[in-house]
Image 1 (tube, rainbow, N blue to C red):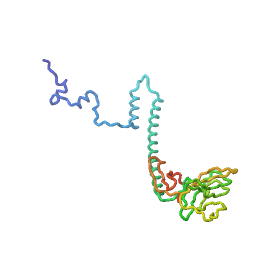
Image 2: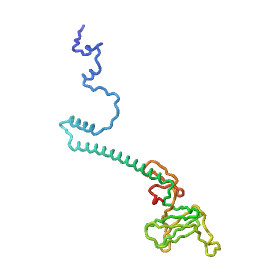
Image 3: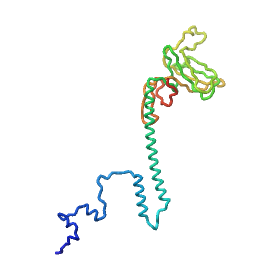
Image 4: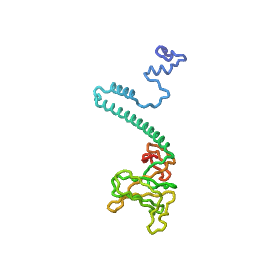
Length: 246
């Protein structure tokens, strides 16, 4: 029967004849298994460590050229820079949305001037708005129409320069000269449609109008452009469409 020299069998030196797994891993030159290993993003330190290892273990007969190292570094820097830019824009977008939401919420109950063609004649007051002229007009006419599309009043504003032109209507209705009740015709308070036209060589050309409306509520969504003002007469509009706040 063969005799085993304990000095040549390290496991026999341990109690029970079993050697710890830790000593076995070290003797074999293996790294111990890591517990709870979690995914980690490649950072700058890890990237440099990998590059040093790559340089140390490259084939001496076929070394990598400097351009390849520079290319790898440039790619890493570009990827890192793009992520930082993306994060910065995300933070900026969130800040802008919060700012717009705060600004919009303070406008609830206020009267604003917005693009539109529906305005209100208040009880005992005047319907007011503006015409947005991009170029000068030899003659500008604003018409007030009822729900059926019938023209109730034509307001001739004459020659105008480019810019915002004010107009108002007190509710007086145009009637023929032969109408005996012409002086007594007055529109009731309510909503009316507005139409503005530039007369060029006798031909009407439509132009945009601005009307006064009341902000009833504010809707918030995702994104910078998602702040919406809900108006009493003109439906919904974005905060950027508001030209004046009364």
